[in-house]
Length: 278
Image (cartoon, rainbow, N blue to C red):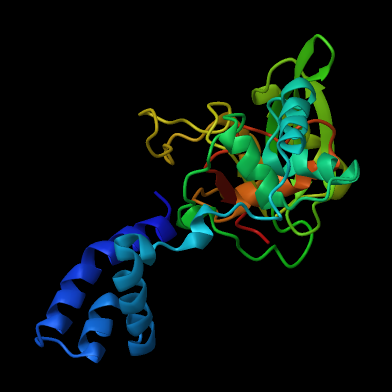
């Protein structure tokens, strides 16, 4: 039940109580109106409508009217059929970009709601503190993101696209395909960034087993038992640490807008490390 419908049913139940109290002299019009959460003038209108039509007179007739701005059924069907036939598996943001590019005139919220009603995309859960937006890094090289996206990039071929990108500018420093994301692909992305751009200050990734050791499924990473990805350059004197980095997931998804195919689906709560010498 929508909020407007719930308020209407509540008003109908409480009106008889307020109306009876006013009729018996126990309540003034001001007190009865306050009980319903309306002003005295509105309460007097309710009295007139109640005495003329009964409880049906309190029904908000706007709730039963079809909006003139409501989209035709065939337009909704075209949108759903297009997503199901050509864009299945894409997130709403990426699909909406193609929708607007092809001349679609509806809002993002309208498109999202229609796809959710058709059970084609799931409803997102409320974002926690670590999911909320944060300010970008002020300078390039201060924070680098790396993650992979599995997709049928070529018909009949499912590959992982490994992207290493800058937090401040969204510039893609390294992009390549592999059969499966793993330690070697992580090393390759980091190596290409260092060879072309130099050392960075902080690195962000998800909780994948090729990045971090997690003793318990869904638990915290083991900071004392670092993965070789983080210990391979200790010979040059860098100190590593890890912790939750707020907002990085959204930054990485935003950066994927420039890459072909859907945004990475498996980006989760991430970890980063910082160099001691900056």
